[in-house]
Length: 147
Image (cartoon, rainbow, N blue to C red; front, top):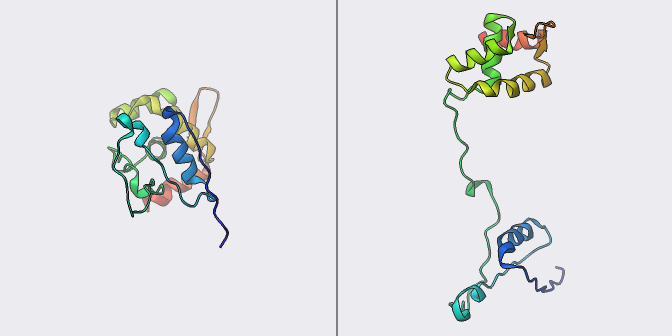
């Protein structure tokens, strides 16, 4: 095993947490120890005699907040728009916003859903009247979900 060298790092009090997070992400940082006794009045703190040094746990998905579930049974705005266009045919953006409002969705999220569908080649502008229609790939996906 390679020999470990001890490096002392001094950081401003406002950047301590950020520095520790960066150090924990580094694969070469083997043992991180932080002494916070300086932050306590008169440097008083419990001494950890005969114990392992304090360190932050490695970042993991278990420590993160759970993702918020959607109000619409897990159906994203893009999936809703895909289903709506499959049922109703070509629509303008205003008609899509109205459909979003009827379903209890934010009408302001229509442009991002349009972008996602266009980027996935499921949606295209049908003509210069600002109508959007499904591509053959999009229509195939709608038909596949119906079956």
